[in-house]
Length: 140
Image 1 (cartoon, helix red, strand yellow):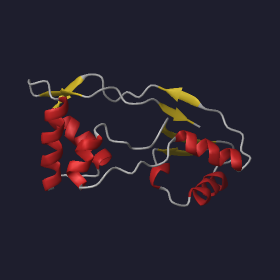
Image 2: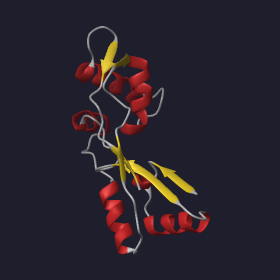
Image 3: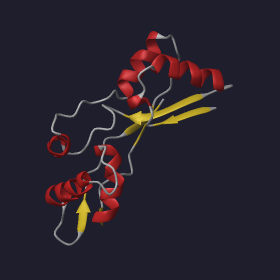
Image 4: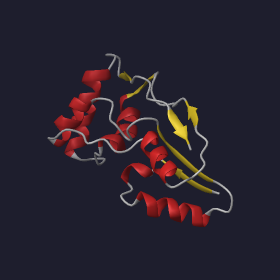
């Protein structure tokens, strides 16, 4: 079995990537991705504040399904609720988990901007942040 979890968003040569997965697997290839556009930050305005430009969304699972269909692959799709978001969490925990989504390095000046932006947008005023539930993910 070959397994890819949230990798396809940044894979430029997706055909070669799929070929390599299939060559490695004896029976089954599984790809996990968000249902729509990949790695989209919760707040696009915060992304623009951090990076000075609009966010360019990567591909999501429906884009992947189009590629697989064009390659003549048989697929099974299962939608799964994402466990991220939906409950209050300490600020430090949320910042640590959101750094990769906003492409901000730990300890960088951008991390403080991210912290401030998350507290402003999603803070509850008690030292906790409550993010909205994320999109569902899919396995293919």
